[in-house]
Length: 65
Image (tube, rainbow, N blue to C red):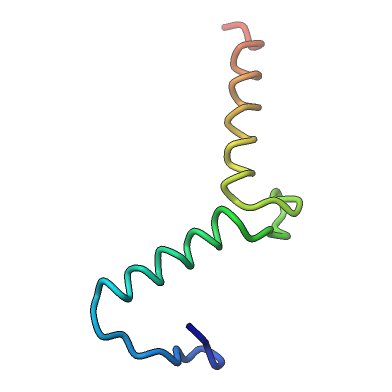
């Protein structure tokens, strides 16, 4: 799959073929490619999310209601 600017350079012959590429792109974007966002610190978004869950659990245990 290749892109030129904002134009997709691939012609899909079926929705299944398109879905396969979309799934692959989302997996790469969310779980593999490091991000430089404010809270990602070079981690992939899914890694950041999982780290936040662990931290939230530790905080919830230490907070007394």
